[in-house]
Amino acid sequence: MSDGQVALVAGATRGGGRGIAVQLGAAGATVYVTGRTTRASRSPMNRAETIEETAELVTAAGGRGIAVQVDHQQEDQVRDLVARIAAEQDGRLDVLVNNVWGGDPLTVWDKPLWEQNLQDGLWLQRQAVHTHVITSWHALPLMVARRRGLVVEVTDGLDDHGYRGTFFYDLAKAGVIRIAQAQAADLKPYGVTALALTPGFLRSEAMLDHFGVTEETWRDGIAKDPYFAMSETPAYVGRAVAALAADPLVDRWNGRSLASWQLAGEYGFTDADGSRPDWGRYFADSQRGVAGDPEDYR
Image 1 (cartoon, rainbow, N blue to C red):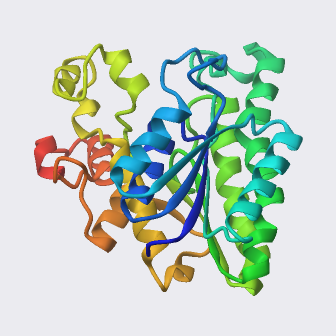
Image 2 (image 1 turned 90 degrees about the horizontal axis):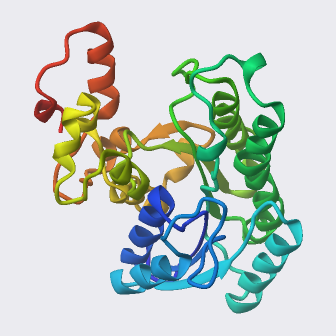
């Protein structure tokens, strides 16, 4: 990614969104980071991370971070955000990352569809799928007008990974992949690329809290879940997006469903600790009962 590019990371308060924003900043981009939690108010997620912190990390990495409080369910807020970007950046938007999620409190893992709360499940679709559509609807005209750009739809799992274990979560994540594929078809005549991207086992702030560890002590969590040995930091998926944004031939990925570990092999980047975790290969070998030492997959 060359200096001077403009990016919007929708849903950049924490986790993968923050990792993506920071790595785009490290590549020299101006990055608009959006989310609901600010230092003045928290979203229903009730987490401590804020968009201001993310913007500061982007700037510290070498870019320019701009925090904008936006609820991407609210069309007027998204409209105003895009109008601001257009006014401040002379109509330029090079990268759009749709990473809005917010579905953790609404996801139920141990009940079939008919035993889950229907309204919660439908609200999850509103938060995790409709927000992507709303944001793209408003932002894509900036890219189409310049006949260039990259749209990244962040999801969980590739398009051939099968059922994700619970109905509404699966519907949301598979829906985001389909959004990428549909956008790719619509955008191809205008020179804009759209694709879906999944991290592996993401070592987000929430996941660290879940295991009662920090980034420095994360390996202590392996005792609770052996798969945690193959986890990756948000920087890994962030570097994947930065690599895609810098690729002059990125249109070869148009409509594809991609993974952080796959792109690490393609572009040669590493995770923050210099390793290259291959979650896909490790998980597949584990399912077949032939996985070896997790360190052999890093």
